Length: 285
Image 1 (cartoon, helix red, strand yellow):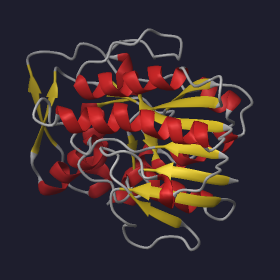
Image 2: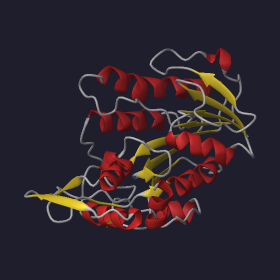
Image 3: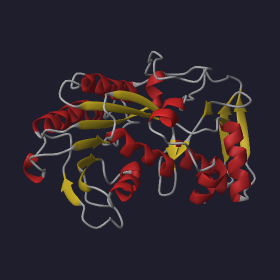
């Protein structure tokens, strides 16, 4: 299968192209070239999705698109709202139009479980969404755009819940792990903090290939089997690293949890997480 992967030099993208390269012809689109060692045979296309898509470096025909690219300035609202919108919304439109013109059969989009908001119950795919900030709203806006292209190709939206693993930087789990290693205090809301169910990157990337093989447009939560409060997660990090965890608690409690029900991922895509949270954290130590 000939596949375009956007955001191919990002954290998930780097793991994904190594997973897919042995069985598919990959075109890897990214703002920069490959980071570190890249599998042989990948066609790299350097492009910034804040600009009109330059199709000269892309194949005129494609079987599938996996759209991972997102703004690197997702935390910088309102200062970099222009970049967030340009990449997450306008850039998604440009990639959709390329997929349509190139005759793609399927379009897989990496969204986020954060579009749901907070709840004390597990989120299922039919639950209403309530994005809490501009970045999350932009991801849901991209989902809405993608839904309009179902008449041209199959659309598969994957709502990812706290994907983590080696080489990741700047996200919740590596940030917490860095604090624990350094002996710094971690602040959590209330006695336990937010409850989440992270998924190891090696398990998360296994959902993409079966998603490409689906015969209909679908939506899936991509999440781990282990639910854990932040205080419990930090304690586990202390055990894994051998560095005693230091936790400070605020008087206020979180407004809800962010836990995704992953039954459809397991039943339809046939992917069951195989890496325990403890083993996943050890891989990052």
